[in-house]
Amino acid sequence: MEESILLENDFEYAFKFRKTEKRFNRLWGMKSSARESLKDWLIASDINPKVSEVCANACSELIENCVKFSKNDSTAVVSINVSDRSITVETINKAEKEHRETVSREIEALNAASDPRQVFAEKLLNPVEGKSQLGIIKISMETKGKLELVQEPDEEVVRMKLEMKAE
Image 1 (tube, one colour):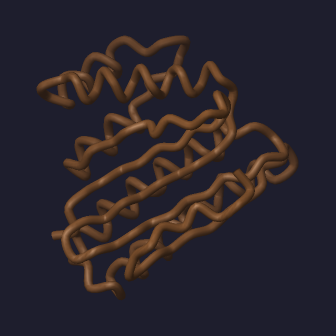
Image 2: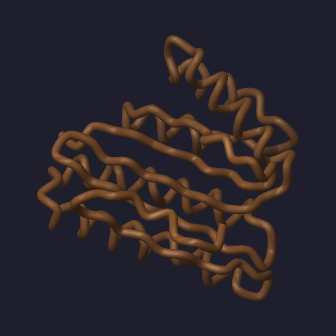
Image 3: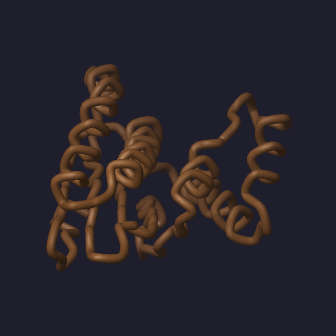
């Protein structure tokens, strides 16, 4: 987990952060600056500004999940790979096994649905334990991309992958 997960590509933006209880508020605030930085980087990589905005917002949602659900004193990694036709975003963090299982169920249900908007409406109207869990669905709807949970041998590693069109 501590080693780099950088992908081979033409462009890549990656950062790591260490979550501790005393830094939570600073990490939470970092989402906005990361989103703006990512958007600017994507535009500099010749990605359409609208697509750059959508991708940066999706990254912000994924970073938010890392900040909220990472175990304390663990490192999270966010990596973006840009090619001519696609953008791949990956996040890796350590979380409780139950969180990984929840994410797995959410992604499976989303990918099985014919219309993500229906899943969104259902979650909005029926939150579980006070949590809407709309972030993953929002990412899918806005990017029109494919989300997956990449299986890792460590049951606490949550590796999410988003693939979306770069055009």
